[in-house]
Amino acid sequence: MAAGTGRRVSSRKTFFLKRVFPVLWFALVALSVVAALAGVRAAKPVPPPVFIVPLLLFVIGYFVLRRLVLDLADEVFDEGDALRVRFGSDEERIALADVINVGYTQFVNPPRITLTLRHPCRFGKEVSFSPPSSFFSPFLSNPYASELIERVEAARPG
Image 1 (tube, rainbow, N blue to C red):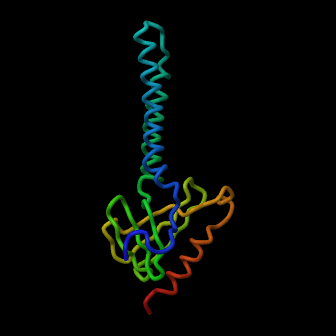
Image 2 (cartoon, rainbow, N blue to C red):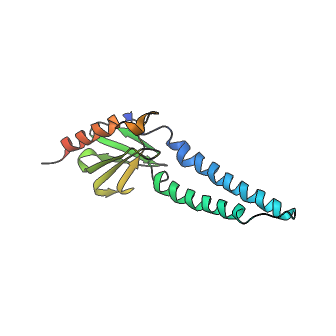
């Protein structure tokens, strides 16, 4: 099947979160450092926290983005007995029978569904994606995650 067949089950916000937001975040941090350096160059006293805070924001932003956003699949499509997962131009079809666990984390932003695979695919032993969510989703379970858990259980061999 071609890319994009089946029902899309990943959030459309993933592109913004993975590609646009990190650039904006690090540009804002860099801009604050440039502004502080301009103050130093103008021979105005600049307190040390003006340099320490952007450094902390850079480090914290890097680790948070790496842990919660950058490992998310770009797109995931439900094809019935399998999920088609895309990271950039790489694509893999993961049979539901090859999934040994479906984890859903709802109290993070963005919410995540993590598939643990019986056999690693080209993306590793775990594949995570962000399902579509609503404003109230932190307080509700995701209906697709519940459905996927049941379908994976039904697809298990034996």
